[in-house]
Image (cartoon, rainbow, N blue to C red; front, side, top):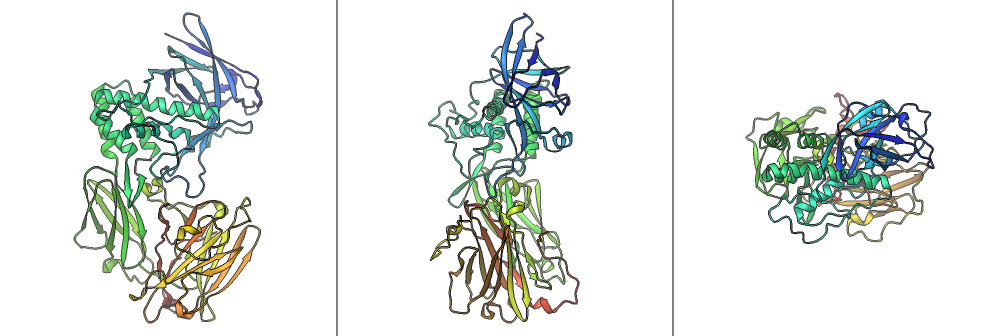
Length: 576
């Protein structure tokens, strides 16, 4: 049955646009769930035409019957998360919002990031045919919409409650409509009813319904063909595990990989056997386990390996530059395992900066981590610690990328020697919207998490002396409240000067000589930047996971200051 949709413009607060003013880029095959929501990218034929937020759509059947539908225009764009927001997100996420009159089409941005207008229409339950937008007839892939996600688990039809859509480390995003499908899939695995999307705009609610419909159809088709394969794919997309007593999301986040699975499951030109084979191939390409470096400095590298599978998994760790027997570690199911990997002689005490590679073999997959020297050499003009890094996300942990702070919240610190004394220079940028009525630092600090919500830098210091606990010293510097020392051993008092400018605050801290290492010892430093008005934080020298505010220190050789006859590379991190 051939159907055409004639899009007629209506007046809105933003302006008006007609069907002849819209085009669909490329040649998409648009999913049309009966009784659900379709979504298709559109562009204007002329940039002078003003976007409208709502248009009327006439659905014309072969019988001549016409049904008037309401279409909504939304705008898809990359998400600019707040620092540390939402552990479970991908490294690169898209969101949809109501369209604005000043949204501009940019073909390069659409190709690069997917940014652009989307038309969302709720379809009738008996729909079929094609859609005409501009001068093109766009084919639709009509499919029946199941009432719910299929019961993949044995006995899965019995739901014991409702999954509450609240922020948690083991939950999907509560603020991204395009991710709402994962709430439904996670609820099915947990034996719960899914939450109902309740966003602040009609566009977001329609987009959430569209994402849910897409995955209901896809998983229902796969589940009918093979419950076992459907269970495997579902688990990869909803896995969680424990890090201590904290439950965390551990699922696949790569949007390209997830998009490939959807294409496999919605490809009706393939029979069930071909779909099952392709879905199994997709599952085999995924790596359930993921790893992050907790301590890259010192004699041992500390790594954390998450294993969300229900079986124990053997991890083998070996340095590329060494000839040692691989270190074998058995990863417990549904757990995060911490491993200390001793550096080999080839990876330590290099004459100047170099890189070495730690290989982690998991089943047939190999993850490679490039690591620098075990010790940071303090050469003129002084090593830079920073920019401070926001907390890791699941996406950044899986891609092994270091997250970056927003440009207006960057912090960095430099260790330097001036007139035979060592000092720290600290610089912290402040957004224009930052609340200047900052909380002051507490009288006593029992836990570093008590610093969250306070504009401050917390400096942790010590040495590598075996008799010294870590940290030996804890100094909190705030632009409003001066500074406090929380581990006063009576071994000296730092001299600290604080200055505040319109867009940043700065501090100089002269380190007491009694805090410095003796003999061939090494200085250990870590630092935390917290912010007024929110619980986010950044750390140096390495990022933390958001549930563990416990940065591991850099090991710094102060004796290298006078050994400037050797070539050297820039210290880790810098700021423009």
